[in-house]
Length: 144
Image 1: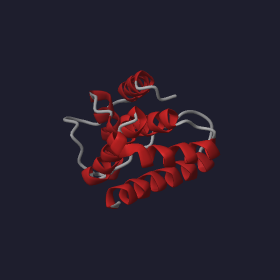
Image 2: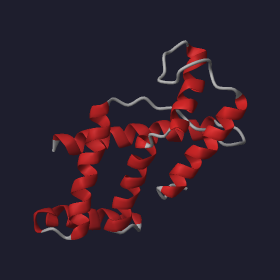
Image 3: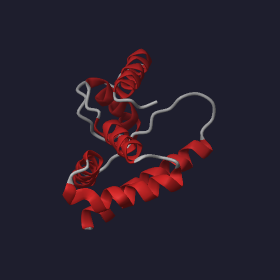
Image 4: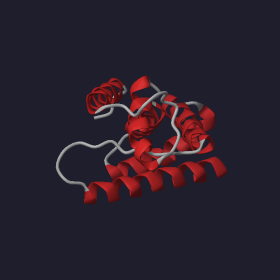
């Protein structure tokens, strides 16, 4: 129950932050850098594992499958779609490729915060290339 509440809190906060940024954004594409402690990401992975068991029809997850089915009915989503949605959120948050480090370094440098990127801040061309690599990584994970 604690893990479920923790995951719900993380997803709720991310949804609220995403909605706030979408309301205030202008034209063009942006990527937001979010800093989440490892334990919050762990909540998401634990819940995703349970959702996958429910999706697979495992007997110990039958009640959760029913709950997800009822929830999905009201949202016009299947249990499988709800599980895929959570998997996409986790994939976006966990994408760990060099391009992510480049974007984080570009975002953190003006703030004077350390990053795992070595050397001077990335130039505009490197940031654009990193942005495209991240978009490609998300597309490969099924994120639109």
